[in-house]
Length: 330
Image (tube, rainbow, N blue to C red; front, side, top):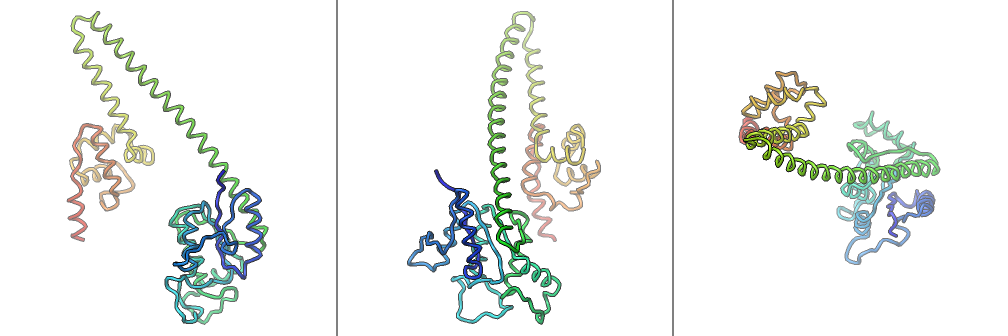
């Protein structure tokens, strides 16, 4: 059975005891720990050593980064012989490993020594003052990396630590939660599959009942065609309205802004352009005020709007050329 592969990223020499303990902890859970000093990373003779590490990150399932006082050596792609000063900017191997993990969008867990994070907080207040001494880091790049991590909109959980046991406790808790979410997700998938099967069965049953009723009507009613046509029209309109209500753009306005379905239908029907739709929505009390800035509407929203129009048997809006002209005139 395949094991989850956990890549441990940090500078080696100053954090070797933490790395060794973390390796034992990961393997005690039945996972595979990937550390550069273990010799498990296959190195290519025609590439720099760090390139093999980045390649290995791409094959892992989880990325654990430990940030201590050392920033680490410069990545090979940009390496120079010049000795680095404290404020010289460059990308280290550990930073590049983090960037690769972020690009792969695998779960990332960041641990920062509390003393190093204290330096970062001091740096935030004195970033333009190069006379300030930061006692716990050997490069300003460590502080800039922390800032970059914190600016990420997601997948950037940070835990400050003083002792190794804090790392282990937090990872144990996080991975238990991740496992529980996975189990619940699989349970929901099963429920959705069962519901989908029931919906298909109901659809088949409804079609059968419809056929039976049409047959009965043709036998009982003198001119059944008109009744059948009218009922078919009702079913078609009901299906169209369901599609309209389930449209992402319509649902957003209905659920998040309390706009009634009847109001939205009316607004869509009396609008002939995106601009008119925005003005009409704003006149109905929409707080997002699309009309004041049409660029607020994303391309995906335009697609949803036109799908909503289609469900009402209306032609798609012609907004693209108008929007391009607006952006050129800015």
